[in-house]
Length: 72
Image (cartoon, rainbow, N blue to C red; front, side, top):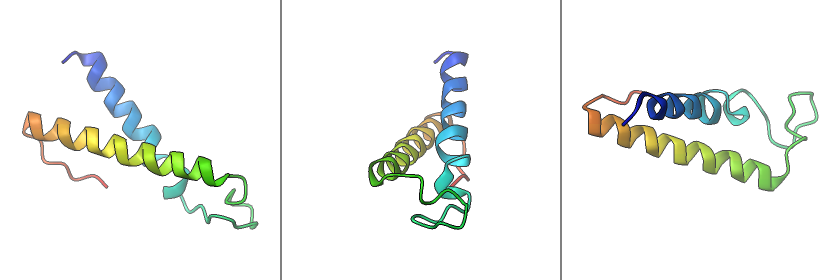
């Protein structure tokens, strides 16, 4: 594994999990200004799927490197 692979994994985790709109107080379908009304069902599905796939990759990486995963 190269450093660029690790860097990509960390970047994906930040983008798809940490800064995922679904994890930042977004209320789906809400019109209060949180942005919950600006996502289509397909976009919401993509956000959930990307988050799940990224977490699986990070968990697998941690297992292979003997790192305790304590994220989401």
